Image 1: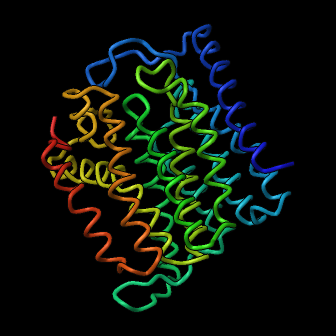
Image 2: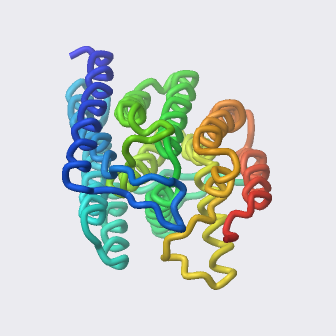
Amino acid sequence: MNVWWLLIAVFVLSWILTLVLRRYALAKSLMDIPNERSSHSAPTPRGGGVAIVAAFLLAVPILAHLNLLSPDALWGLSGSGLLIAILGFVDDHGHVAARWRLIGHFVAAAWALYWLNGLPAIPLWGISIEPGWVGCFLALIYMVWMLNLYNFMDGIDGLASAEAISACLGMCLVYYVLGSVELIWAPLMLAAAVAGFLWWNFPPAKIFMGDAGSGFLGIVLAVLSLQAAWSKPELLFSWIILLGVFIVDATWTLVRRLLKGDKVYQAHSSHAYQHAARRLGHMKVTLTIVMINVLFLLPVSMLVALGMLSVISALLIAFAPLIYIAYRLGAGET
């Protein structure tokens, strides 16, 4: 099979499955009902992220068969992604206690890290740091935080989808410039799967992603970033920089709420993007974040990958303005 036909098939499958899931949600009254913490005003079907999960997980074995994805990456992506999607699906249709969800998150992260063979040496402050067991533990925390923050940031129309697509396509460009074409295909397939869903999720959204989709995207993006680190360690930070809007907003908001003594496990609407959406609307915020990714974060990400900018300098350049914006928008404040 030609890989470009596979790309088209993934998009079409995701598009069709999202339509089917929307009709299913309407028939079964699986609706997201607005409340005081919501960023939307009308009841909307949820659970459409399952289309992303199905389309991507059906594509990755074909990529492996075409020798465009290593068997280890296949098992790491598929196993961790499927577990998180199942947990999210059950939670979308009922409720899973927070402790069991967290245990499942760490199991999924540990599974992926096992297949990725841990972490390579990471360059910081001009030296190569061997991660060892401490590094593997930090990688687990990173992966669990990524899947949770992606869930936190899936709160307005099109945002989580647009972030995933812009990050994946941005990294595909980075890989192409570096000549690491073997890394391009998995994020490209993920972008296609998300694009099929985004057709229905673009503002004003006709269906929401749900925990199954947002958690899946978070863990898969984390796995892709760690996989890239084995090709070139700086690529891990290229991913982190490209996902900087989500990482900074979610982390700043969590820390701010912890310092205030808020119950951080309770739903809220105090993220920077939610404050911005109330002022500007969903579409403007989503498109603005895509512009930040493309015009600001992608060039910084590229410079890190090319070795033209140190990791620490790049993180400061990328994150400092984002932290200031989060502060100015009142992230963590009700």
